[in-house]
Length: 151
Image (cartoon, rainbow, N blue to C red; front, side, top):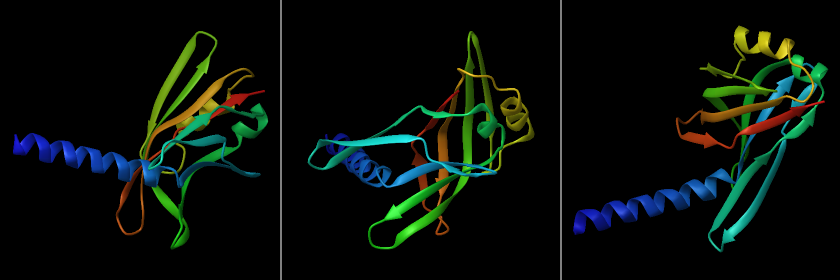
């Protein structure tokens, strides 16, 4: 009984810490012309918990073709803004009936991802998901997905 209670308490505390830290981490796509943060909404689902979701933001096919990196920005109320290092993420494109999934182990988009973006057409959904990042101090974070819809 003690083991079950301790593990449940640990899980509960972990979820609270995850929820509180997740509200301050924002993924950012970098293109030749600037940064694109997508549409991120946050709302309180209880007094101690904030839910953060990403909605697809519209981006032109020309703009997405110039993407070259993914970053995450961490906003700490006591330390200010900090760039996180992307360790890995999953890239997914949904076009009509075709879905492509590629993986990346750094913040720079792989050649395969960049090739896919160069061929992207209108009405495609692009997702940067399962993003894992770390601070310079070695703390690891799961980052909210970043979604785009091409026009």
